[in-house]
Structures are given as C-alpha cells and as structure tokens.
Amino acid sequence: MKFTTKLFLAWTSIFLIFYIAVIGIIGVFWGIRIQFWQLLLVFLIAGVLPPAFLTWLFYRKLDYMESDKHDPPTFSGLKKTTLNFNARSDNPYAEMLQKIDRNFIVSYSDKENQVVKFRTDSRIMAWGVCGYVKMLDSGKVEAIVYPMNTDSKREEKVLLQTLRLLKSVLEP
Figure (tube, rainbow, N blue to C red):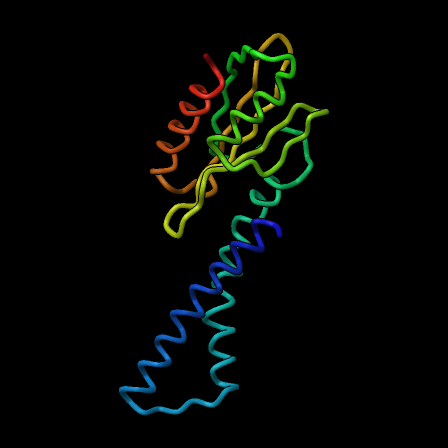
C-alpha cells in the first residue's frame, strides 16, 4: 500500500474516532438522536474532506518519494551536499543501502541507477523529511533532503540534522 494511502487512512481514522466521541457525548448529555444519513453526511464533510485535502497538499512529494524516477528532486526548500563514501565491501551500493536502511525508512531503491530514496518518520504534528541519495563515481555520494512542509521554520533545523545524520552514517 502506498504511503499516501496509508496517510489518508490514518488521518480519516483519527477524524472518525474524534467524530464518534463527539456524537456519543452529544447523545448522552443532550439526548439528541441523529439519523444515519445525517451522521454519514457530516462524517464525509468533516472526516474525509480534511484528510483528503492534507494528502492532496503533499501528494507530489509523497508520490515522488515512492516513484521510480531517478532524477534528483526539484522541490523548494531542499538541501544538497556531496559526501565521501568509502565502501568496505565489494558491493558499495548494497553497503550504502544497508546503512541508510538502519537509520531511515527506505521508500525506493534502484541498484542499476545507484539511487536510494528515504524518509524520516512522520507524526501527527511533524510531516518528516524526505531524502534522495545517488552514488557517483570515485567514492562520492550526492545527498539531497527536502521537507514535506516548506513553510515551517522548524523544518530547516530538521533538514540540517538529517544531513548531519546522513553524513555520520555514510562517511567514516
């Protein structure tokens, strides 16, 4: 299941739980009885449309993260750096993928094109950071990280922390 679908279902579940609690409280304290079609209509308006809107806002970035596009991302707010990577094994790509997989959530990898896309965990209050790593020739790695929400000042710090973590993971 794609991350965008999981995100939409998670948000809809949260709205559904909140909605059921509010309806229960209204029914217990005020004794108001609501018809099923009214419940369904209000849930569609208040429980499905907001998660759909939130998912729509970030769909382009989320879709790129899981797609098989090998081009570097071109989103606003991204940070880019080149890191040294000295592999200890005969298969440097597999070693890089394993190191990234230990610290991040790998959403796409392509051995032929030497590309790994990853993300950090997303929570209710933080959308997380996405990343793109491509092995270059001569022991170099191109690393790009970008925020899901570019309007947040906190995301700038998180991007720099993610780059530092990636550097500590890949460089000796």
